[in-house]
Amino acid sequence: MTSLLEEQALTLLLEAVGVTKAFGGVVANDGVSLAVPEGSIVGLIGPNGSGKTTLFNAITGAIPIDAGAIRFKGNDVSRLLAGDIARAGIIRTSQQPRIYGGLTTSDNVIVSTAMRTASFGSLFGRARNHAEDKVEELLDFVDLTAKAGIVAGELSFGQQKLLELAMALANEPSLLLLDEPTAGINPTLINDLIDRLKVANNALGVTLLIIEHNMPVIMDLAEHIYCLAHGRLLAEGPPDAIQNDARVLDAYLGAA
Amino acid sequence: MDETRALTLKRLLMIAGLLAVGGVAPLLFPAYQLQLTELLLFMVFALCWDLVGGQMGYNSFGNVLFVGLGMYAAAIVQVGLFYDVGLYNEARGGGTDFVFSESQFMTGLALGIPAAAIVAALAAWLLGSLVLTMRGHYFAICTLGLGIAAGQIAAGIPWLGAGSGMLTPNPPESLGHVSLLLYYLALGLAVLCTLTFAWLLSTRLGLTLNAIRDDEDKAEAMGIKTHAAKVTAWVVAAGFLGAAGALYGNMVRFIDPIQTAFAGATIGVWMILMALLGGKGTLLGPIVGAIVFQVTKELFWTYLLGWQRVALGLLIILVAVFFPSGIVGFVRERKRAEGKP
Image 1: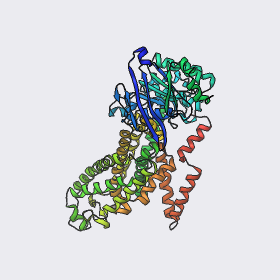
Image 2 (image 1 turned 45 degrees about the vertical axis):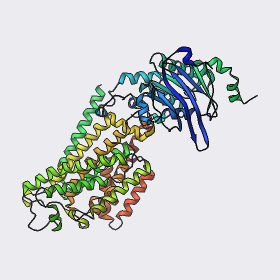
Image 3 (image 1 turned 120 degrees about the vertical axis):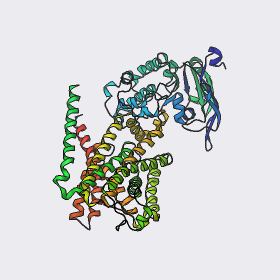
Image 4 (image 1 turned 30 degrees about the vertical axis):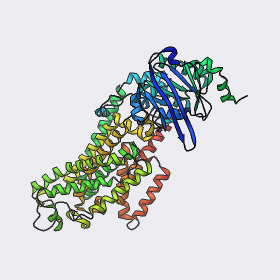
């Protein structure tokens, strides 16, 4: 198995080493290791229940891990709280969109703009003058400009997912974890979304780690793919190799 | 641009009109001075409850804690500046030994009200780090307990007059209508509270509080410093509650630890009811709610005496069933349904 790092000798942004997490008797992550080089787009696939979202939860500090280490920019972040990890530069989106339902669409983006280095006093700055251009740009980026003044709870499922993406980008993360970004999105919008994710990666310099069930999408986007099954790392490699890997096909379709 | 300017002008005129009404009301209706003062303090109570309960989504049942702390703090400063508080309370504040001159009374009031705000805010800051890590029902039950505990503790301290309570200083006769002075102080506090909250809600803190209300875990995962925002809102609300408590104590003149200061069953519940009645999570709601509540309460207490609590209970049920988003919320929903902004 050739590692992406050996091939390209890139600097690592995120590195998970032997991450293990059990819920009672169910081992959701069993010694999972993966590496995400800076500036890359990495895919994470696997059948339902294979531990992908658990790994995301572990990386973002939503759940504590039992064993292993998660290094971000060289520092171990596996014992940090969710807020500290977010401020360090890791932001995620969810399968079920999580937005602030009572705020307007644009306020959702405004309140998500990065405040990493901000002082306590900045809490008392006027909310809506803050980075207005950037907010408009991001709403335009996800095609929600027309919905800017609408209470976000009234947006459709797909629109809420796009809004969550805009919120995540507003936060200017170094690493963005996307949990099934195309699930529930209108098929005609999926190609747009792929383009936008590529732009975010290229132009905005955001490294992406993406969970995706839509194979054409992930094969198109990712440079390197990890496949999980039953909580363990089953295979890794470039999209072509993964597509033809017998173990991956077995995991998805059942052994022949 | 012109439209927004016209809107601001309209708003300014409205505010000026309201201030004028507030300014002359006690002179036009001298018989209702006490009720009007109470109304203004109720507005502050409801606004403060709503900042944490409505805007931030943390349903506190213990805000009377800060009202009571402010009430006692002000009374202690007002008396303690000139007399020994223990002896004063032992003598039930009366007699010829504890007379307050004009300047003593005014100095006491001038220092007592800010002291009340500071004491309540400090208490909120100290408690906040612990209490605000709890959520939902746990937070509600914990704050309820805090309010009850504070009343029981105050009732057990002889220095504060224990269960027999404490009297606020007797205003000297030469001062004339102190109730009018209290009314204008309450008006000033209500205006200051409304303006402060209007400003706070327009800042990033306001948005942050709403984000916490909608999904605190998400806010946390987005790197928002939720704890700092929560404590800030709680401290600001407590400060205003303390100042309002100071005025309330001076208005009723007698501080019973459980019936007046830490009155969870009356003021404590009423402030929540007012916010819900007017519209939770809006700036106007608690103000409207306080007016409607005070009017109905006075009517019930006058015309339905004996059944007043039953009538009030019925009102609560009707509001909860038919206007779950309150008066202001209901009007806004109707407007939105009609397609008006």
